[in-house]
Length: 326
Ligand code: TRP
Image (cartoon, rainbow, N blue to C red; front, side):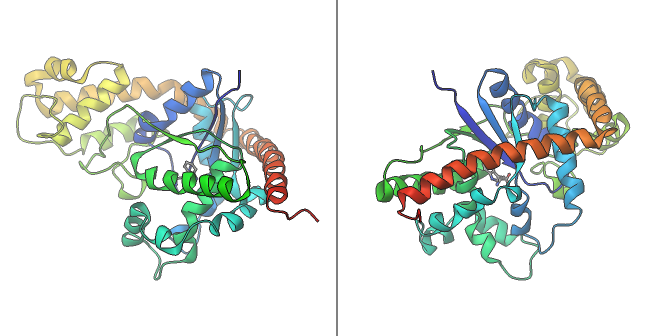
């Protein structure tokens, strides 16, 4: 039996939050625990797509690795690595770029959206080409399954296109990976818009219980006293109900019914308790790991060594297929 190879990753731009946890991190741990071979990528070059400088990058990278370890990523089974530390992975970008046209890169809706919100004075070449780089992230280890959010689907199509065209042109080399979307419904931030590191509306996994209480206290609700679960009609209230339900492994409709006429105050109290209770062990583990940063650094270093071995082998295969072994 061949084991499934899974690759996914994050940009190191700040702490991972509860949206990440329920949307994707939990899935990774499930896949790992189910016996898949999981690769978790710290996408440090991708930080440069929408900003000119990668500020506090090393701090964010270490923080990300600590978050991974705290939520249950086991470095004995899962490879955690940064793509900047894997030269052969990056070299795959050159042949891959030859397989996609400029119009194909140009019409990527996620890239378009990021350009609209970019913090750069002008759009860099990296911004246009990063979906092809992401193909190298995925194909260097021949991953077949990529757990991602919906916004990443256009990128996965680019990866599949590149794999297909490479195979057609140079012979069968790469699998065409499948996306794996989380089944958990989307959590909104405390202001009722998409939960995002950069919007200040996210509850970090590593937040203290006091920070959590403060963020939830300030969360947007509405003026209807009876709490109900109605994501379309009452998005802010429903997202809070959903958050508590996810933390308690409960049904959101039943939970809303229990809070009933308690209003926003009772809702917020339940959500705060549910989050703080659910994340207490993860937060305690993270604090213990953070006290010894050498361990997390060693995890990343070892992961990069393993990723390099795999990338070197794939690049050899690619150069052979392309007639570039001299
Ligand atoms: N683009 C992803 C994000 O912004 C991060 C990422 C980089 C990624 N390379 C990847 C995700 C490969 C999945 C597979 O969140």
